[in-house]
Length: 174
Image (cartoon, rainbow, N blue to C red):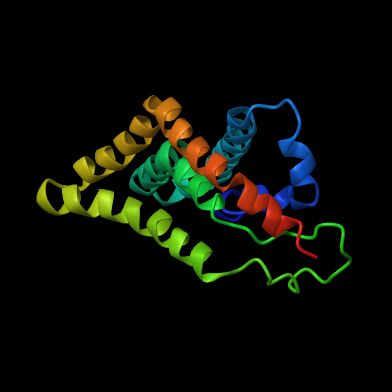
């Protein structure tokens, strides 16, 4: 989810300008990307079911983390994609690890909140009230993201709209 979401417009960089002149609302484009990230969270949760072997506590942590990523993490990741102006050349025959052109400091800085925020949301209630409350706050933050999905998506859309021409210009550089 982190890798896909922070490179959202870059995946479409080869035909992004064409995509932007179509009669597709930007919000629909962004929703499709969010739903794809949410599907990856569900698949990851299903694949993590064998961790139940290690106990209920581990599985509860995974479920709360999955709920956070499903509800809030996917929007944070999508937001970080708005600031990615480096195109991905998907049609170029290259070795898998040669495409390092898309890694930059901005993307790294946007990765930090996606990693640190769920830890902070868990640790603060865990320290003062206990493990169950920390897990509950982590899960609740994901539910809050789901409940507020429309306003959050509207804010993200505004950022993408504001940066649309910058993104098109950076993708069209040869």
